[in-house]
Image (cartoon, rainbow, N blue to C red; front, side, top):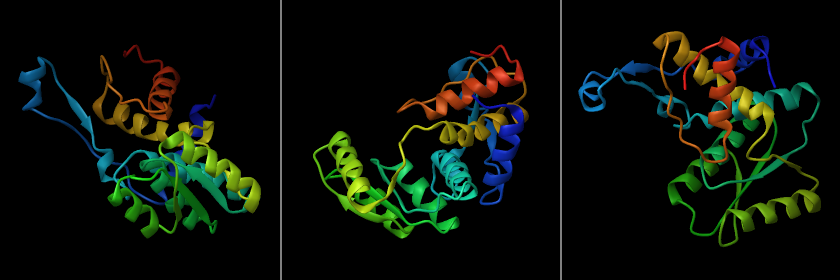
Length: 196
């Protein structure tokens, strides 16, 4: 796992591309929920999602290690925006494989961010298998949807929230593959918080 020093390094990488996102205590939610409710606005990132943080950290660290070969990944959306956004900033080409019938808006965003977009397969698993095959055929580096450096990057949003909101009792995190929840849990542990 990573340390607070690692998170500080990740913050410098992330903040070179975007400012911290806001978090607000929403007074109209408080009576509905029976408690003070803070909302972290990761929709204010350049791609509208927290995933960009992980992409920025991972692609920056790849470049620092001298791993500048083009990358390929599979996704249905936000990860597929994160990787080409960050790859472009680091001078690395990116290919993204999505399943057929994927969101046209997400596909357009990935292309606009510089990705070569390949649409194939009936679901994420088939798209992922194509990405793995193409990585071998084309000599591309496969970027998984879950990786320790992605978790390190997304942990920066938890640090921002904890810094601004103060001591919290609980945090609710949506879970897909788990980079967001893992980043929040690790940040909680690093800060010695008792939140659930």
